[in-house]
Image (cartoon, rainbow, N blue to C red; front, top):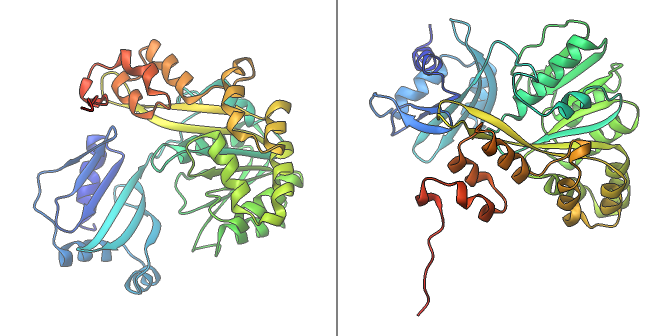
Length: 363
């Protein structure tokens, strides 16, 4: 058994989402959003490098020694599965292990709005799941893929960095390909997928203009494309895609978004009132004529007003979703305040006044 497995086993036993290992500090666990050290000595450079060396393949070891960061999946001897990011910093080696549950959660168990399930019934176009790192985007997408795999007979191609949840084929065929192992880049993966008779293509991250362009081509040619962006609202997601492509393609990109982008789901993970868990709270944009017109006329700043009044179509702003969850006592109001856009609306719910801004008097 690799020595690093002992830390990972402890993290699983505690119910943590991540295990952090870095030179100069003890191992740390991410539990319900908070980072806390375990009772262990500060890790030394040679010690930690020895730990991670035990779990690397020859090609990974060579790449890491050349100065590259590594992203890969790792399975412990006990069967625990983790997404790993391995890097070097000023004081030495660092690694983050994200726990990947063995059981793929259902959309219902994630308490996501019913409209998310309806997005899985689409046959072409693009649906984006966005949010900062660690907000559960991969989990939501895994639940969507599992729903498709369970309810429809499709050829689903999933491009990931790295492969996280394992999807055994059910009614559908699910082909999972890993960046750096099976494909050179996400753009190459989408390009190859278009020759593999896909019905659904999942793109792990729309991280550059070439990948976005290839994903747009796939969505326009009769495929359902699911993808992620590291953006924190529907407006920022739309603007990111427009800005990522060359200026001469701006009109074409706006036209694509207006006609083929079906939805943007932006999520945060907010603590439950007892502090023992977190719940996904989502902003939802569903494309309609009004939003399409705002995109074509470059008035995306007005999209939030459409989300606010589009509740019957399944739309909601992040602030609306947070306030609803507070009213139902599903989330902690103090933690919700951190994610609010218009924080003044949330100040009356806050119990920990230290999170509120302090007023200063100018003399």
